[in-house]
Image (cartoon, rainbow, N blue to C red; front, side, top):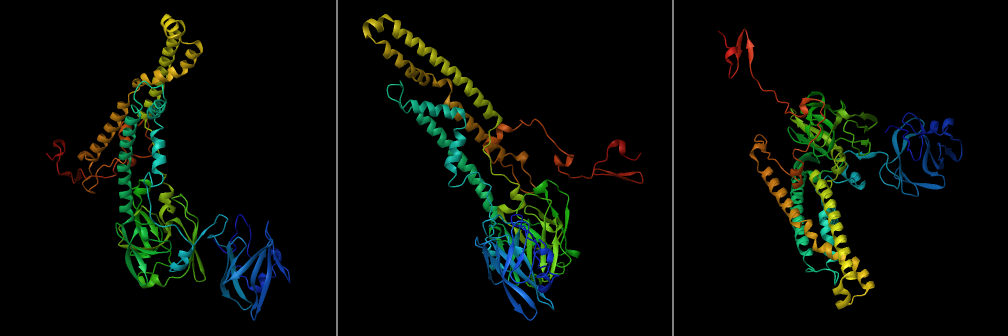
Length: 524
């Protein structure tokens, strides 16, 4: 973040610090710099100053080479043969030369980036860095993943796997005594019904995501704020957040309507805490109270890469010659809400799935409820019983073919033919006894789960009138987990309650004040 920044893959300490003149920098002995073709040594990779340019104020580097990799200059930006940018920024001019700072750029190149550079009020440069968009999705399926994920989920149920096996062996000629479509058709109907149910549930998730992405926020455009949808917010945008609004992305606080750039936020969506937390902008930006003020803001933010740590943030804000450290107290996280503050200005640093909230979210998993696991176990037991019955019946049929008078004298079947039929007879008896594992049970379970999910959605006892929020069963399998909680780990009662204190009664000078005073509390 600071000057002399070093890349872990290419450790290099720059001699071009902001307090070092060009002439002094080239003569620092501890940096391995000598006259002529000057070498800047690092721990593992030597940097060679291959070209210099003299000016009235001293010697200024133009291009560098590193271990047989040439670095060419282009408007102050050096790139090696792997197109990894190295920035040589001009910090100021001293009496001895141009003072420059060199650091590895985190954007572009083949190596993993080490930090993120964001330009203030410069959307063109930020667009070239190709930051992630701000749209999010919490849906379980996409257009391309629905079929494989859905089929994997369905056939992870042993009952469906068994019926698929039965439907396949029914297609083998001279084995199935029943219709070839006797199992395949009902199984196809069950899979189709389950697919429709999954599509309906996932459509609701997509609708909720669309509602969130379509929320409006004010974004600076020129010298005024215009409303944009959340999905249109980009890294580097300066946003104005009104009181009670949620933050559309991870934002660095610049200023607010409160003195000293204070802002109060509620993070209940992040950590469950309903008490307000204080955030405060830097004193250097606290006086930017109008759109015109923030539109003149120029500088660079160098921040850490996106991560899932809600309570840490490392970055620096460079305003002209000053470099200011940013801390978690300046970071407003997506999902938090601005409270008791009329408005706040901030610059977007992380968007979409790179925000800390989304980094802590996992993809919607394929959940197997306790009931499904129990059913799978019972299916295994039933299949073992079915296989045992089929083997016993096949042995009985084989014995009859080998020793029965009718088979030997009338049908005159050979011993070798009877032995070969033994294995096919096992499959035949599996088909005959497949009703031991009822397909109707699976259909009934799916219908009951969906119906109970609909009842949960329409339950008035779980409707919150103050926020107009009904209960929402996002997955029909949720009903199987109701009442199945074994342990609850909680650090305080506020996690399980509403943290709401209702006035009951107070006593002043021996007189009780309450809406309803109990008889034993009344003044006699």
